[in-house]
Amino acid sequence: MDGIDGEELETSWQGPRLRAETRQADGCLVMELSGDLDFTQKPEFRKWALGIVAGDGDRDGDGGGRAPIRMIVLDLEGVEFFDSTGLAVVIALWKHAHETGGDLAVARPPSNCANMMRRTGMAEHIAMGDTVLAATAGAAVFRRASGRERGLPAAGWVTAG
Image (tube, rainbow, N blue to C red; front, side, top):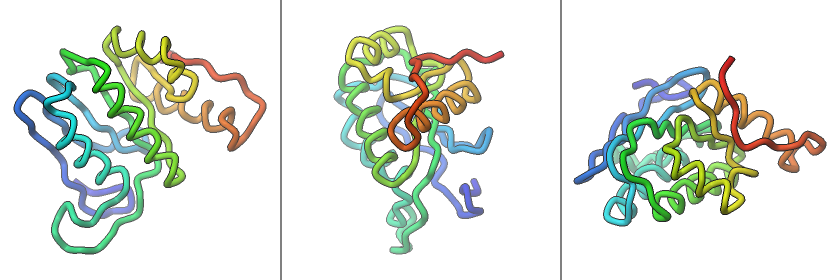
């Protein structure tokens, strides 16, 4: 798969009960997850996903770095089990994206994920949407409202249409 700047990106990761596929859509990198995002998947998946976000060249063994990805959407439609460990991974990815000047949004989160994000206050920082495009649009609003561009109120959920 070609990267954001025409570079090759590793396209998938497979754990015992979680699978991640990357693709480009609507001007961003989309990570489609399916299966269980729980404590048994966390260490390996987190390492792989942080490498994708950071543009880590070690994924392909060439030793060279890539530019960090600027917009990532986690598409959680295929996630069957999501707990606090999953939320911790989402937060780690969001923090890492922000440290490199990027954004992270969540598309089609399971209801328990959306509820956890609202209850913990993370919905004030990480845009959620019912489509990839809606999540991306929500991230743009959050970017303006987050201190990078102050003045607009944040809303946790964006719908398409």
